[in-house]
Image 1: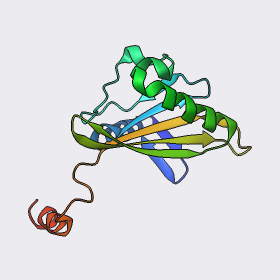
Image 2 (image 1 turned 120 degrees about the horizontal axis):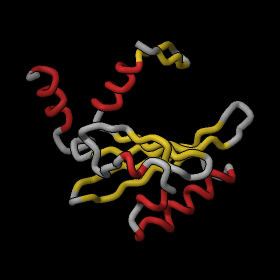
Image 3 (image 1 turned 180 degrees about the vertical axis):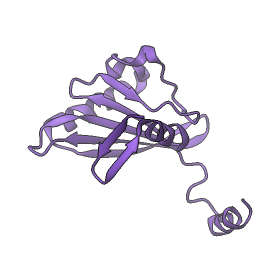
Length: 139
């Protein structure tokens, strides 16, 4: 089985894929030309991505009402004016956190960005201490 060497250790390819398939967070890698090159293929995705989306410009997969904002975020990341942005939206009446993180090499050259999306319905809610205790003791 092929291994991927990473800072901090190495993982077998099937282990790495399993991580991204399992955690309830979706990741999209957008390269330095704003082209989607990779998306996590997990069962929890709110915003579905298909193999057809790979190779598309990121604006082609975002709805029209959000394109102005996505353009601004990408412009700021390309220019070095911003390294991250964290947004909260409502999607089907659920709170969703969407964050963009600029990726840079050791010389600070822009490599692209990762878009991280997570449904945060069960985060920071009233009674969270009780919910946490129930999660620990009632598996």
